Length: 202
Image 1 (cartoon, rainbow, N blue to C red):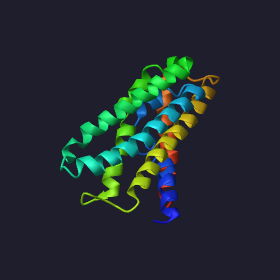
Image 2 (spheres, rainbow, N blue to C red; image 1 turned 90 degrees about the horizontal axis):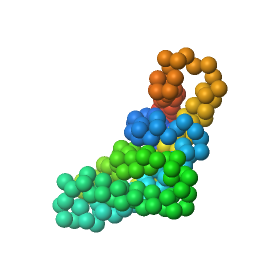
Image 3 (tube, rainbow, N blue to C red; image 1 turned 30 degrees about the vertical axis):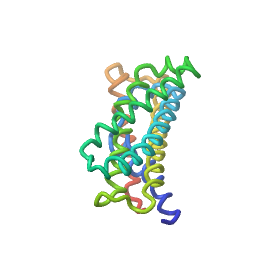
Image 4 (cartoon, one colour; image 1 turned 120 degrees about the vertical axis):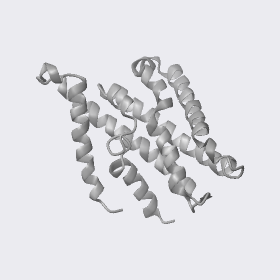
C-alpha cells in the first residue's frame, strides 16, 4: 500500500471523521475537561496514547487469539479489558509524574476507560481492516495510524473548544446560556464547521 493511503487515514480521522465532532464519540471528557487549554491538551495526549496503544493490542488480540479460535463474540469484552488496563497504566504514570495534572483531570481520567471514542476506534479497526475474518494487507499499520489519528482529532477538538471557552469567560454571556447551554451550542457550531470537511474526496 502506498504512502497516500496512510496519509488519507490520518486526514480522515482528524478532520473528516473526527470522533468527537463527526461521530459524536467521547463527548463526556470533551464537555467536562475543555474549560481550560492546559488540562484539555493533557487529556487529549492521554487519549491519543490510549487509542494508539489500544489499536495495537486489540489488533494483535483479534488477529492471533479471537479469529483463530473463533472467539469473535468476545470482541467487545476483550477490547474493554485491554482499554481499561491501558487507562489504569496511564493513570498511574500521570499520578506519579504529575500529581497536579492528576488532580486537575480528576474523574475524567478514569472515564477514558469508558470513553466510547477509544472503544470505537478499536471496533472500527476490526470492521474496516478485516474482511472475511482475514486481515487486509497493511492492516496493522493502518489500525495504528487510525488509532493515533483518532487521538489527534480528539486533541484538536479539545484544544479548539478550550480556547473558545476560555475567551467566553471574558464575554458577557446571558445567565441562561452560561456553562452547559453555551458549551453545547459551541459544540454544535464546531460540528457544523467540521461537516464542511466531508466534501473532500480522499
